[in-house]
Length: 68
Image (cartoon, rainbow, N blue to C red; front, top):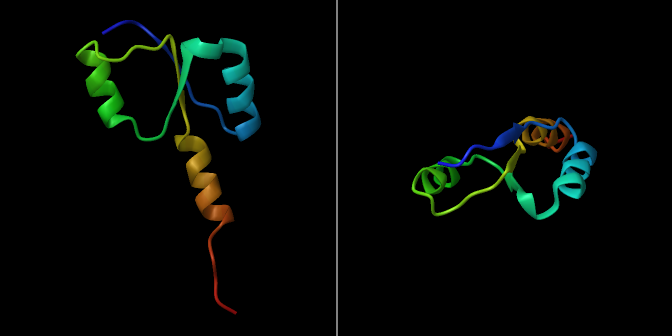
């Protein structure tokens, strides 16, 4: 597996900034179990992985529907 830098942004703005800064060397992941397996098998590589897990929780809370 190739070395990589793991990013864990806390907002979509931060995610977009990371993508802009790292271009084609960055990949966004949500979950990522299959991605890590593919990286271990050298089927996939990225210099920068951008996790969306911190953002996903916020989105779920913000979108929670409560009947009136």
